[in-house]
Length: 168
Image (cartoon, rainbow, N blue to C red; front, side, top):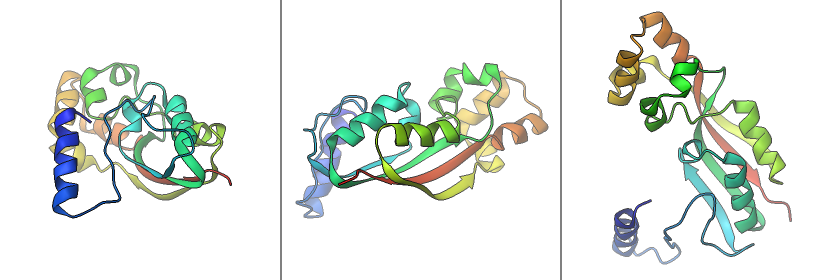
């Protein structure tokens, strides 16, 4: 989040009279939060942008109180992307090339110490999203992709909601 986003979030919390939230500017790999001080960590499609997902999960685990919960929505890969796509800035900005394999993602959560790790929902990446998204269109154009290749890449990507718990 940017300082402007933090200011807007604080403004919205004040408008909604939400006194039980706090917004801090920091990095996802080094959270500005004390150890064992947070009840819930949530993330909506941000972790796939971090090059060090294991550190992100270790930090979330560090900050959670015993019994604390993690709820994440993120993009994962069901099969590897072609090399050119992996190295594409446009694909990274579009949250595609930063994604890792689903099994690796789940293992990183468990390696951080989380228990009761489970996928609550998983949805294939719709091809029409790629066709209508300007960033995806740039990737398609840069790589001169055929409709078959677009379908192949769309079939490689899934959106997943994951829940995990820090043991007591």
